[in-house]
Picture (cartoon, rainbow, N blue to C red):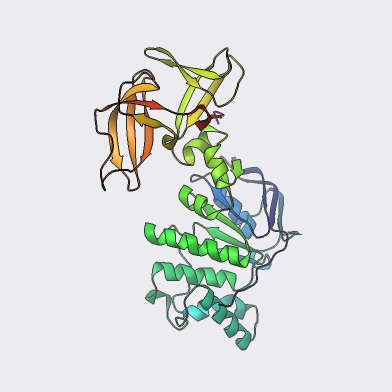
Length: 365
């Protein structure tokens, strides 16, 4: 298979980017470095500033202040067509009246490339996205996944310095979306191309990115490898947005290694993963899959009762009412019974417990 060589360059560097619309700050003094050949995902809810950030990289918006550098070149004031970018949108944006080959080669034709050279490039891209023999087909005759491949090929054929992916898989159904995550990630890695992905889908960001930047309120709250951010969130927002988390608020005891939670039956003590300053108020995050369940009223852990049980394929989600905490918590357990079965049933008495190192102290932000 022919492979198009990616631009190595110096990647993408955003420094002090700020953008306001009237009195509303959409992006606040944002710094971001995407290394050459790296794929970074901007992840966050609607209105967090991720799309505005991407539009400033693309040149569709001009920052009020700050710098955008692509391949080491300052491009903040350059129009989109002079930034050497490729862009893939959620709705594909293919020309319906042009064939697959014409869609892929459109940018090359606009750049004045000779037909023979253009045809060779188009052939390479059809091979890369596994659409050999479909060059003369119109987009309406393709599936959603095939149309997205054409859109990706059209972006890559111009050999961009940076590939921008704007919710690229949002229009696809779940199974196709998952397969396309592998395909896009595989192509990005083979070509060694620098890429910036914008998504609100946590699974998509975790599956595709080298690093994930979680955004809210126009700022990056935390950036790092997907596993690091998931296992060690720094704030309540990151812990709850990137997956599900049980959050406990309490006061650090004098031993500096435990947290006292106020409950209807008095104070409940939870272990801390590391020593903290006594007397301070802290938030402890514990992921549902880190909590163990025991079908008994044993003294270890906290006694509770199953009030919700849902089968989710390879795991079961339980809602456990814990009287001593005065609240319900969520527990995920790997499926170990017949298909569709849950290990614990509604009303069953259980105890919940977890290892101290499985909790993470997070900020209230």
